Structures are given as structure tokens and as C-alpha cells.
Length: 71
Image 1 (cartoon, helix red, strand yellow):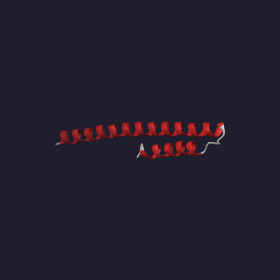
Image 2 (cartoon, helix red, strand yellow; image 1 turned 90 degrees about the horizontal axis):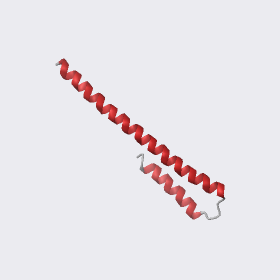
Image 3 (cartoon, helix red, strand yellow; image 1 turned 45 degrees about the vertical axis):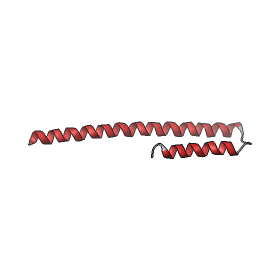
Image 4 (cartoon, one colour; image 1 turned 30 degrees about the vertical axis):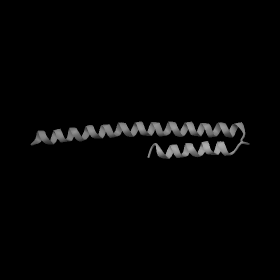
């Protein structure tokens, strides 16, 4: 999900640039900037979610150890 949606948006931006030859330099720069921002945001979100999942797994293991110690 964090890879497919940004890739679709980047593909749409690239298609927009390919289809419209008469764009100004500022519009082209904005579209390229938008593509970079989309890639950065999706990468940051992916890393944060991956880190949170790892922490969640560690917490589950800690809870299981505590439950086993109580028994």
C-alpha cells in the first residue's frame, strides 16, 4: 500500500509530463518536485511503520515472557 499508491501517483505525474509538451519550466519543475516529495514521504512512512511493527513484536515477546514468569 505504501509503495503502490505513491508509484501510481508518480506514474500519473510522469504521464502528465509526457503528454503535455507545451508546459512551462515552472510547471515541469513543480511536477518533478511533487514526484520527489511523494517518494520521500512514502519512504519515511514505510520506515516508521516498519520500526513500529518491530517494536510491537518486541513488546509482544516481553508480555509473553512476563506471563510465563507469573506461571
